[in-house]
Length: 410
Image (tube, rainbow, N blue to C red; front, side, top):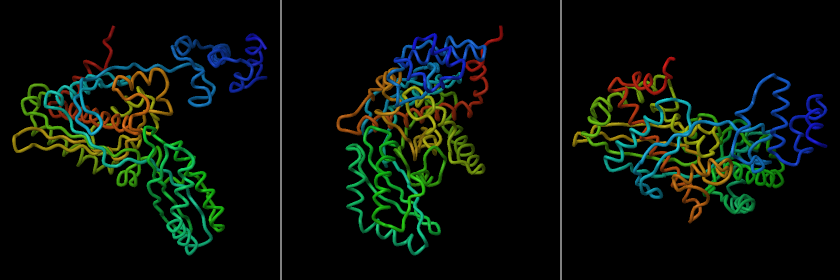
């Protein structure tokens, strides 16, 4: 079937939009057919959506369905940012995709303050991906028996779980009971991958094994919402998911005053009253100024799962004046879900962005690249927090947005 015929059948609704690849061998050409269909049907022009450097064939069956082109977001660079982590050790430039004027400039200012003061220390204190299948049993007695069976057969469960993917290894099974319902929260090491897909496949096989072995238990849902994926939650806030990372820095008093245009006392005061008291009053799962800004911008740039910004940006920012009169600031990210392989990280633009930070692809040893990336992300969030807290303390926030975030009137 030639292209004209495919388009004609699309317009007559004889071919569905998701079926075009069956008649057109190339995904880029299929995307063009869909764009033409939309242009003719809706009376719109899709010139820019159809202008891209990516080969959409690499996205087939792994990144997107029914593609029509590429959505382009401006990418800026902040840095250098000096990071002293267990995996990231050096000065790094941070790629940020955003449409919010002043964000890159703000993060860049924070990077400068941190680097001039000796750098940020970053450390990963937990590292695992979680998935929590939900089982239903006849009664609370049966629910309790299921949990006991899981504990007694841990070795067999681990063998089944680990058989799915060599880069998904079981760490723990955390049971939770409500009535006759049982959640089994599986946690696993996923090395350089963010790991959600790998853990899901392992849980599916393990859940079926449990059903076959414990006849009274039925897996109601492969995900029972106790994982917790793409939703803010207390369990991720307290127990973590992905990587729990802490970044800290001591900003020299003279740097705070000269570069950030405020004092350590005023910046710390804003942090306590805004981040801690204000967020506490709001009962927010985020005691921070704008960590989501930095997480989202890095996620878009590097091909992370953007919906996981929800839990990845839950963060606590603290600030205090040291005995020497300098400013100590820390950011704790309980549930930072990132990877350097899999998902969108292998797409050309996103892989280049990871390469800017020296984090593209698998690490040696396995898992080291994702850990390095997580430390850099945490330090970048710290830079963003330092800059915004200082701008608020100095009363400069509105002026900065007026100067950098609003187009000049013609």
